[in-house]
Image (cartoon, rainbow, N blue to C red; front, top):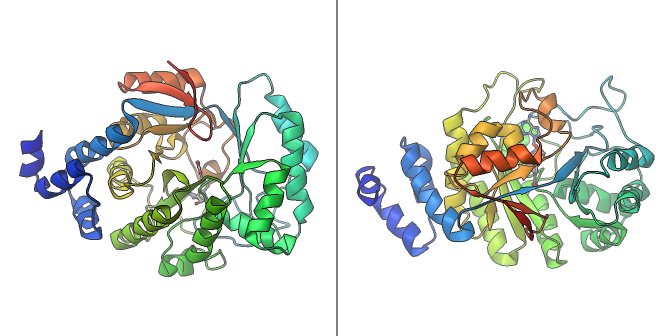
Length: 364
Ligand code: V47
């Protein structure tokens, strides 16, 4: 195989990968522009297996989107709606508790909860949401509120981010999901999500969370107007932040879904682009423990293949996905854990059911 990689012109990068040497942005360019996806997969798999062996993780989780009312109205998003819009909704704390109660007979270990930037819900609502979920399901880990939401909540609370996070943790928050990062490039943000918290703001919140002992994830929304350089800058920025704090758990490349968005003229991503983003992310983010192949966005079949291209985690059962489905996702909104186990086994990996912090709950 080494000869094959050398023939593909990737011998120098292979040597670096084998030696655990950090790849440069130039190496990233070479990889993103390289036509040989098998060679990229081979390289990424070296890092994947060094970090996670033959294990492929999944979690028994439930997504809850408490409200889609949003003042940011990003052009790539079909979920966020202005207050008063026919499709706008907000759940009461009781409604969220009812959603949790509905699944008490399932072994859910994580509730993943995000929403829009709501114009007038008070800070107490968010604290009550967390407390309410814990009342119904005391042992569940709540991974909630993106860095963008946390910044907004700090403004509502009238407190600095660290003290806001302390209040949220006291009410039941366990960790932060990776959404809202999009692409950090100011050019992209100006065109696609002008009102959203800038990249530096997102990173500041993540670093403050890490310093408070909270773990967080990170994402990148790819497959729209971003350039390869902008993707690599995004990855490099995350890599530098992780060098500083070590608080990121997983990186999740998010494939853009154009339907029902203001960027509907774009095409869906292709399988090769999806695999490339996973493989190059695995290679560039040498200090991230995990790379997720989020089956909701790239489909279960490609997510299974991605386990050989750098990914070591398929996310989980999800139960009720809304954000990607409003943007035309054709995948199911939930997946049974038996299906996840089968997909992983047939990919030649060992299925490992984990909790949010990657503690092993069961192996199959
Ligand atoms: O923040 C919005 C993105 C994110 C679209 O942390 C879109 O483990 C594609 O962050 N097409 C929400 N993507 C999802 C998310 C996530 C999902 C699974 C696991 C984790 C984790 C995080 O989805 C948003 C935004 O970046 N998004 N619109 C769209 N049309």
